[in-house]
Length: 145
Picture 1 (cartoon, rainbow, N blue to C red):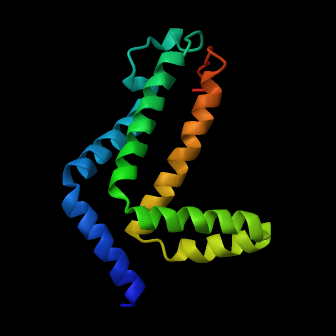
Picture 2: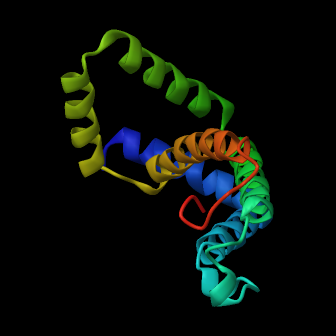
């Protein structure tokens, strides 16, 4: 086992130990988000679904995403977040699309629990921005939801 894997396992196990309750909450929020997008779980008659404005539902999702991000901000070590953002900036600023794709493919092979948390973090930041833009329309159709 190389030192990077050991270091990664170390910070992750330390984080899980220190923030056990937040990891439990994170699991519950992520499961809730997953189930919320299944319209069968919402109190809506199937006949009304095409006419429904899903604005309030998207507000709930936005709040769940914000809660997820706030949990991740706490459980991820500051130095790891800084390194993540620096690498992302450097890749965007200094690498061509082809080189970025190559690096992403190479990193995808070595996905680890620690890396997956950062992928989740980055994805939820993007989701937050997308949902904020969708909410500007005030009328959210079923297809947009």
